[in-house]
Image (cartoon, rainbow, N blue to C red; front, side):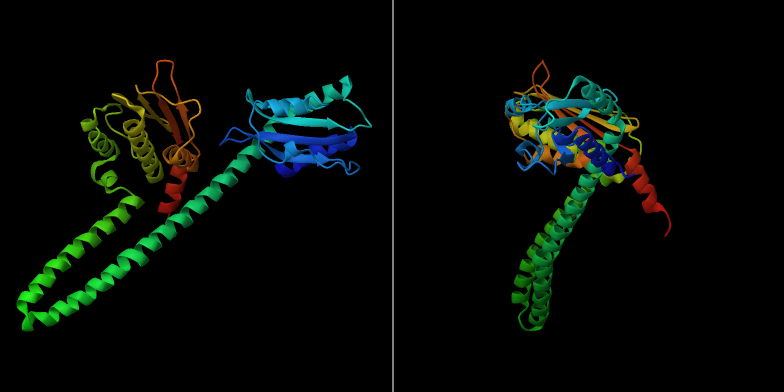
Length: 348
């Protein structure tokens, strides 16, 4: 039986057996930490319709409004997987059957205790689907951007340069001075096109990664902030092992974005970059700046870091240590990326 269907069967069985108004299984999302409904039962004999709170994700612990609703006859049974609360079953008794008695409560508690492993598989599956969707969207967006750059900018410019070169060829014999002046302008336009091509190549994969290596490329980027008074220190291995291309690029982008955020927003004097590699790539970027505000919303840079890590099955955490400043912690698993790299190198 598919795991999603198993959760549907659980809530339906509970609903029918206990004559409930509603039963809902909530799962904690891996990416946002919110609880979302993944399986629910609503009594066909109840004409009032489902309660509004089962319509979408909600934070955990429950908000004040949720708590007030829950006290009106709700029974909430959290369940765990490997010591972490990953979800809960919400029970709403019907007006006919009345509150859940002690015997039924014990049975429900035992069920909640036993479904943790199955529920975890479901949430991992849901997270994999969301990651796949994000990868497809990102890939198509990248293709659209490349097409726009090549078709709308570089392509027409190259076509115009070709026509101009033809016109210059006709001037060489009849008007050498004019041809020389046109050639000077042609060279300037060619430099502009070369700059555009380099920009497109950099967006695909920064050339510095292949020319200098990841650590040297990061150090070179960090040096540009020295004039702003930011000192960047590195606690990294003397020599990095060969990393899968996707992991290397993600680590580079995350560290660069973190250092750039420090320089732009933290008002910091010192920043430390730590990197270690085992079964995962572990990244820490810490500064002595003003730190994150409690109400600070995630900007484009923070969202980008999370997306890059999430695409590889990793994550990024932002903390405000007791000593002040901001700490960015990221981990990037190597297993999946290595498997993908091996598939790319296989013949056929």
